[in-house]
Image (cartoon, rainbow, N blue to C red):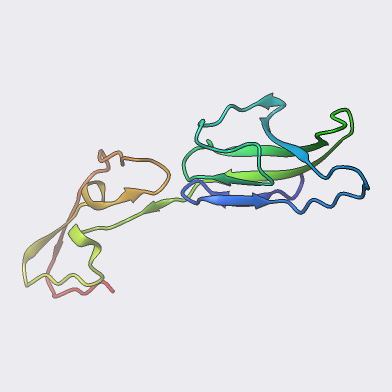
Length: 150
């Protein structure tokens, strides 16, 4: 838990397991992923398969925090024989992509004695959420010279 895998909330990610079975009997296995946050089991979207050797987690499914992903493997013929492995994942903020002007252009020009209005609340995006809180104030500056922001 001291060194979890880190993924931004706006990222999809997959965890892939390599399962080696040393048995002369049937090799049929059952697999089950369990996901916990602070020892509480998390129920995910039903579209996410928890019974494969790989688990795919789409972006914005898990809130920020550290999660324990446990894969439990048991033999179909001997269900009491189980083995499990853990991996810890931390979901971190992606941050806000600030676009000060419409279309996120990288250069702004303003003429002599003209106001330049920057409006990050209108044009920016929060990659962690479906929508952005546009209540960020607009900034109005008055410049007596031509300015380029690159």
